[in-house]
Length: 248
Image 1 (tube, rainbow, N blue to C red):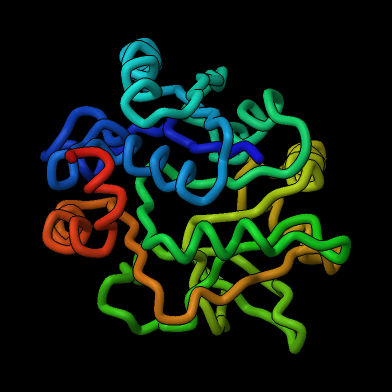
Image 2: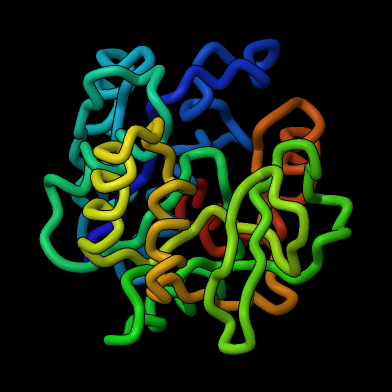
């Protein structure tokens, strides 16, 4: 199984801390390296990193990162990084055959999340999204979260930042089949902007977008200075094995 990490955006909300969001250190380890190491721990054999903003600089750092982490890491550059994130998914998935873990470079997870998600494939779904039912958790930024409404089976009815009703929050980790990129392309062909959520909603409308609840597991979207402070404080404990492997 491969993993795909989206690292193409500008990262405007972290610019006061770092001029490269994927390379922003959290307790001494860059966010992107944390993601690569977490993917490896979940069973990934190779990681594809989608680059865009400052692509040359980021791509130049990948060989050393791969050597440190002990896993193949390959770049895939999106043509226009200012477009919605579904375009980055398409660019990266073109280098992958079969199913893959999809992650955002600014999301970090305790070990049970990705390892558990990796086991959730099935013929009844085109994608499985890790979700958290703790929608009032103080670690979640309600102004930036992507919300999820599910049916009785736990499949997605609606997904987005502004949906009126919801019962879970998107954790930023997906187990994907090729159906996801087909759905994003279909949304673009229908005149939509090409976001990942648009592709997910398209699969949801077909009854093909499943969820998997993370229970009490820890995760964090490191998207602004407040979240970065929390990550510096909590990540070394929550990701103890990753930090031990990286710093030991």
